[in-house]
Image: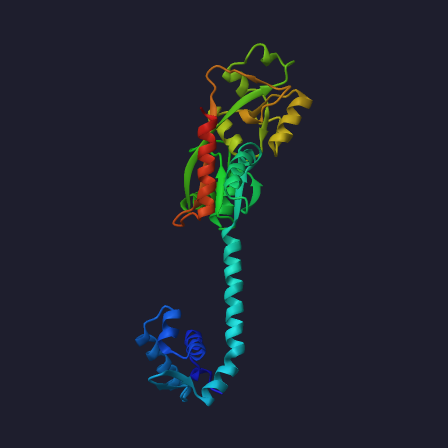
Length: 311
């Protein structure tokens, strides 16, 4: 058996359509072809098979007995092809309604719920899978194509002590990423009401000399604070999430740097003269790749939500 003497799948579909309709012209129209192209393709298939599939006459086209046997044998092939096409279509439709997002903890806890809420109101059948990580891990996820879209809150010139290996790694990620600012996040120094700073705010130097609570290395919050306050002493503790940071500050009385949106009673914000800590929240995606309709919709929802919140 020589598989090279079998026509391609599109030719089998045409042969079946000609047999079903008894007309070369009708078959061509149903498949979006010209009659000339269809006739040429049928003749090429017959030459390859070495048999006459049809008998032509002024009244139309009739399938030969040999052609009928061949088409009967090809029925399983054509049914399998239709099943495969349907499966691919279902998979494509499902993929088009599912979006994987990686976002920093701050974004996941205090921004993403309203953004996804707005998007889901317009597209209730969409599924959004969210991975919570720190900003450095989000960049890695997007650069490695593990997710299509990421959200980070990292300053332009990250501060803090980082190893040369981490710097090289992040440099490689940045060359692979495109970014757009969708919001602005403000960070405040928070203390319990009983803390002396709640009554008498400290100087900038005093804050630098005090061991406070900070997020872990790689966090956008940590970088923004260290950029605004270079030369800080080592933190009293490094905390891996905003909710844990709030609970630790409340339980220990140690000052903590928190995004304004994460502030809640009993903590109060300290107004330190000359200290302004903030960072842009950016949507990031792989450079050279266009965002899907779903990803673009989520970015637009973020921009719209923050524009409303700022009014």
